[in-house]
Length: 582
Image 1: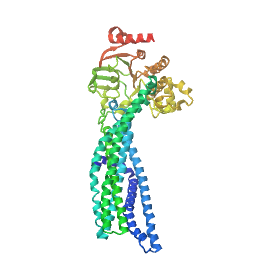
Image 2 (image 1 turned 45 degrees about the vertical axis):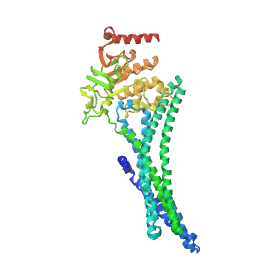
Image 3 (image 1 turned 120 degrees about the vertical axis):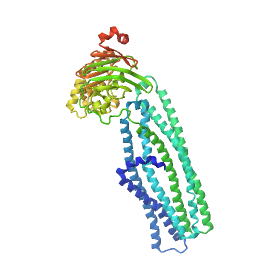
Image 4 (image 1 turned 60 degrees about the vertical axis):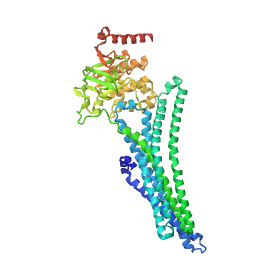
């Protein structure tokens, strides 16, 4: 019954149903040779060895030959079963991981504000492995182990019909249902404990990911000891929770052994009292062992399912999260936008925090507009509504008169190039990082984009040129070099709308000057929104929008705003003073 939740994931076995079927068939061969074959051979072989009159050599050799044959069948069945079940399992694991990862790609930006990266990594890597175990290995065990149990039970029934005085052995089988209660109780406890373990695994992953992502800051502020202590505490919690799962998991086998040992001793006592012959007695012991061994394994299967159920809860939290910025059912196609932007009575809030309030703004195609204001005024949110990283709570955002919610997100985002404050590069070559702007671009196109971004000289000075690997997040390049590659990517995309999220704030004056020149070239003929904290980046802006507390309180040029808007004058003077002091 508890496998019902896993049923949808069994569909991932369909492409490998032949391999999985071969594995199950091999498991049945293992079960038959173990549960029926070995007891049967034992019953006939023991009397031949123990009786006073020795049988003919040919007969003895014939029965003796059955022993390695049965063990060979068990070994072959076990190997083929293990190999093809592992093959199927790895395939299913790959598909489930891809499914979860693909779904994460469709989730909105807001989802990642609420969930830690390390925890999501734990779900994609750790929880999927436990789910794969439930889907594949458990299904295999639920066929192979009951088959072994049935084969052994069938032999005991067969034996009881052969000799009525040993029908008592069937009573020993009655102890098997007595194992159900501890299996059920322990399984329920494991679900709760495993949920806590997986959650703590996510927390441990988060601490590790955060540490490795901030190596410079940790050393600059002498945080090594603090980080070690934080990791040690997280490890200790994970250790403590894991032990609780182990305690319940490992308690099941001894309980089952105690129950079955009592039944086995009772069966032996009656067998001795009834003077059962050696062959039958030996085969009874083998058959009963083959009955109880699968019972123990099925108990472990139950525990595995319970642990996988805890992981499934965590995975389904991700899989059941819906895209809060969905595409329209029948989106309006948009091949190439002109770049007219319009914000009509736009409001937006994060949870209960109102960020934008009834904002109106029109940005004609080809105009460069700077967004200025204190931190938290709503500048970045305003810009993020254009590519639909978020959707408005009220009002609408339009491109060329079309509500962005009526345009497919892929079409919409093809019209927009983003240059962020922190240039994000992937662990690939410089050429491939630039090519992200246009996957079909030629090498000549990439070099042209690099020239326009003032990146050509430093790239050609590198030993491998455009084939230079940039390292994780571009760690082998300077901040200015990374930013110029990011700008080259935007040039290559050739989008009509550009969003510049303070692209020079973390650079030295020389790099800033080079990038400023590249940005002026990039802005020509395009609609540009500059999120500005440093006023040097808005020198070539056609218009400035001043934000305060989620509203646009002023709009105009520097010459118009400086004498007439107190907030703008305050921000400008404060930064000018800081620049002079530096």
